[in-house]
Length: 464
Image 1 (cartoon, one colour):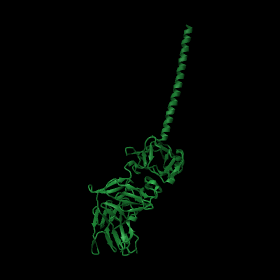
Image 2: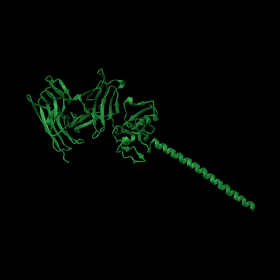
Image 3: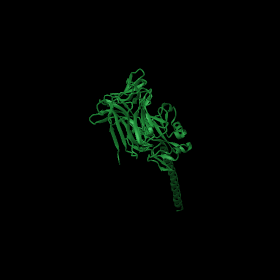
Image 4: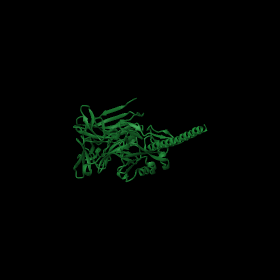
């Protein structure tokens, strides 16, 4: 396997000497791109360094292979040490061939270009008197004028990381994208809470929440050395998600593989970043801990929602979901309850069906046809949650108030669900009834044989 990694360190001459924290208008730098595609190719030109101790912030023009699309992406990135903390290509990648060029134009627009001067990304600051691109000690990449007034900043375009000193207002979010998946995670600051969500198409489910005490509203949050501070509309701090380590927090990250989020500090001993807080330390409380139709067990390992179909045989490998088309015909599907199971996912509050029975909850999912594949019923609150995916399922204590049901084609039974329990009870009942009948018939037959032999014996005695 060939691995290509190109790094260029470029010092920029500006004004009276070497300036490592900014570049002026008119600046250009270009990276060449290989003709043949290689999935391991990474090329970077480091342009700007922040004036600080290691690990320091630095800016790079990057070319990276996209294995899914088998193309090369061109982006401008900010790094803290070896960690990418911001990228122009986070939400929408610019693919190009032959070359990747960064230019701060004479009219103040920062642009990424490909062949034939095609612009793939821009800051949109043309004719705003921008004079230079500058990297602040906080890691904020900014475009400023002669008065150092900020015209554009990377802090206004959050990715999957929030840096020390960064402030995010209510109704903004961080996003992360698992590799080779249509699902993505979001860390959202809302008016009344901070929450983690699993997103897929039109479906959106919360799996972790933080609510300020006394129902305080949230106007913005800010990352400090001690943690994430929460402020209300009076600019008063009302809550804090605190670091559990004395070292200063450097960034908050939403992980793209698990959907967990954490606060990170730099460990001088290990020469790397370590988590000082994580939203959850339990594997089973993460939405993608197991594959679709998998269940996370007490041992933090994955098992399968084991189903047996008369037509298809065993469907217990968790490899895929049931084909959507097989669940879209109401009269050809049924709801099967899993024993001692629940889901960590919760829909929006206005999607919760209140004051309903378990049977109504199951019927609501059946009637929703293609959009609903599972349902969760809270027997104490009498609330019903409907799901468009079978994810985040976990084992719970016996006797839990939750009843988790999965939609399956008719003719599919379960070894440990309510349907199986019902069938098992009917089987026991049949066996008992049959046993009683056999005993009665056998007893009657034995009594008949006994009486007949007795009569024959008495008749023989009289003849004598």
